[in-house]
Length: 535
Ligand code: HEM
Image 1 (cartoon, protein in one colour):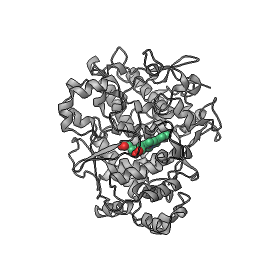
Image 2 (image 1 turned 30 degrees about the horizontal axis):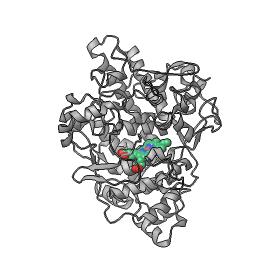
Image 3 (image 1 turned 135 degrees about the horizontal axis):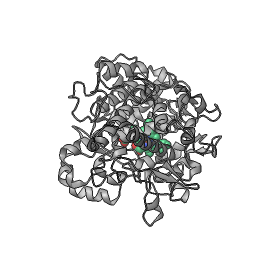
Image 4 (image 1 turned 30 degrees about the vertical axis):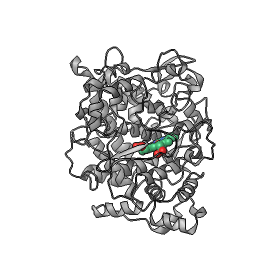
């Protein structure tokens, strides 16, 4: 089963930190034959390069981890309903998931193994925002050619059915079993884990194809693909830096990191050196996205008023579900992007839906939506018979347990660490951690348990408390970890707007603006009938 978390973490300087939370085992995201072939032929190089290069940004949290009874109670408190909605359009939740997959994608899974050098392996297993999850190893690589049209330029699009519409689903397989027919032909199968992330990937395919169709006029044929990829990647990075990040993090922190440089993470690294991924980001800060997930969506005309429930969004994907038993996505399930993003920001009043149809993400706070308390067993590789009450199905408990597994620094340790690096932040007080602001209620903890949480606060809970005390935006410790990790990943990408300071977007309304709505308008030709084909 494909999920987007790691089961074990290779931390540079420490080795493999692995321990099951239950169920799911590690391994490459795609269990297919290509992977097996790749694995066989890269064995020698692979031995010298770990599966993915994690690092520790701050100190070790050894001796500061919560015991299991306490994690169960805190995990239970964090999975209670409440918190309310944010001002962030709900599409950004799944853009965040798409970004997580891009950051952690190991493209050696879709490369022909014989050609993989140790240097490529190192790069592939390091965080970057190069859209490898969209491009794989490029049309020139025999294993990745299947993601492209015969021209080697356009990415393949998929058909939805009843009625058939081309370009509104992921391209899917042809084989002779239902599962093979459903399987998405995309480099990273995690992007078919739920319908919302799958539709995000579909939009990115369109974005690339439209760049190919409209932006390559005089580019010599041999350079066309690389040029298209560069244009796409740099615009995507611009959107992340100027639109996505300031929505989830205090904008002042994002600006400080991108204008003045990093203070805490890989400071002074040679920009082109391959970055690592701090476990403080993976195991805590960027799991902020879990609190943004809604239990249900006003999905489109056919599934309005919350009828697009989270379990249905899983079902109508091919790795989180079975596409409702079909081989292709049903057209009735194609997204209405107007309900996920606010096109009024781009002055397109004609693409704005009424408030009762629009979906806002849940507030970034210390609460996660109820369905995430009872993850489908297959999502975390537990037997189907695992009861809903089994704590291993609670995502909050899993996140807290994963932190214990890697001896993650506590919130207080990270605050002290960042301050020692010259980051200007105010530590949360014990009263703030105890009370929060309409988030997880720690009342069910015994006094001893509560004292442990207030003294050694799990980093994930700490950054979410910071956010809920800041109107649902990361600040302090959380904002710094997220902004610095993204900055380093963009800096170390093959195409990089951090290194290329002359880049300015050309596909948005002006030379300093390119938001997610601009990306979608460009990809869907600004047309209502494409952004919402169900009418
Ligand atoms: C319906 C939506 C989602 C579900 C069901 C889900 C589920 C999961 C699960 C089961 C794990 C592994 C937990 C473990 O450690 O055992 C995980 C890890 C993770 N999730 Fe999510 N997630 C969702 C959305 C998101 C979003 C929106 C973001 C970010 C914006 C996010 C960020 C992460 C990160 C950073 C990890 C750790 C990845 C790693 O191991 O490096 N997730 N998620």
